[in-house]
Image 1 (cartoon, helix red, strand yellow):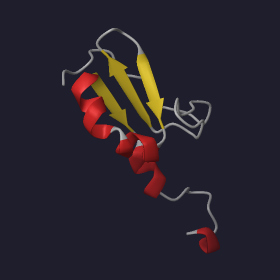
Image 2 (cartoon, rainbow, N blue to C red; image 1 turned 135 degrees about the vertical axis):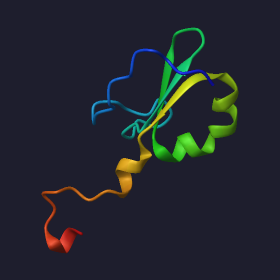
Image 3 (cartoon, helix red, strand yellow; image 1 turned 180 degrees about the vertical axis):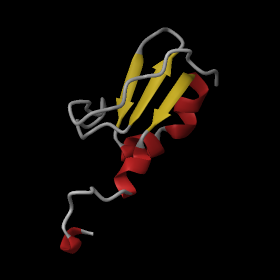
Length: 76
């Protein structure tokens, strides 16, 4: 894979998985200039195929394991 010179903007709750509509945590930039968005589940499921066609994969699945600073002790 090659690196894109301009950093992609962070994914937000408004970014939805192209497969199921869940919140997207992966952005796959294609050589054609298009992009695909995937939730963590579908990103893992299609990872081998995506790596073959991607110019860049922006993976923000690490955010799923972090606890919000505003979370109460019961939520942690």
